[in-house]
Image (cartoon, rainbow, N blue to C red):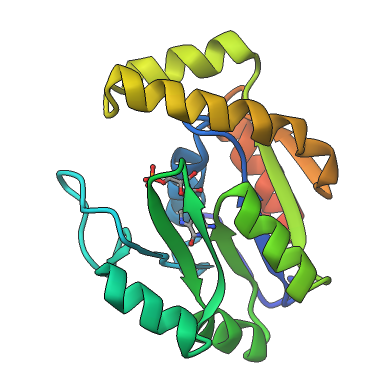
Length: 193
Ligand code: 5GP
């Protein structure tokens, strides 16, 4: 049996970004399986839930008005309009509470959001998840079958722009296999085994 320890990890914010369908969600799910105690921020979003998504677990599903209120009251650490469609943002309070308690915190957000975190919290480490190839990314997006052709085109256009920004990040992890990418992320978080 292996024990993970967060106590030796630096209490800092790690921001995970990368293009659509690169597998960020799968990597974070594997990381949580290995480290159930790790704090992963639950974002607020104005998009509706997909089948199987639970309010408060996968996202906080909020109305446009509620999202406005969160921004206006200073409760968003960062937020962005993603894929030109819906707004997504990180509630500040829970993240700050983890960091104040000396525990690491993980955000999985888009490029615009990552840039905002970098500006407001310069000690955050930014990690970019890269697909093994462009063709692989296109195949993964088509394969998961959750978006129609038009939405896929929109997401691929965003992905192209995002991949050009990889050099702004502190670390790049190639998602060749989930196990390997998760190993790499564990090392960066300082929570290996
Ligand atoms: P999806 O609609 O597929 O769940 O997510 C679309 C995109 O929104 C993902 O690329 C994800 O990184 C981004 N996203 C999710 N939560 C946040 C957030 O809190 N802030 C920002 N800026 N982007 C987010």
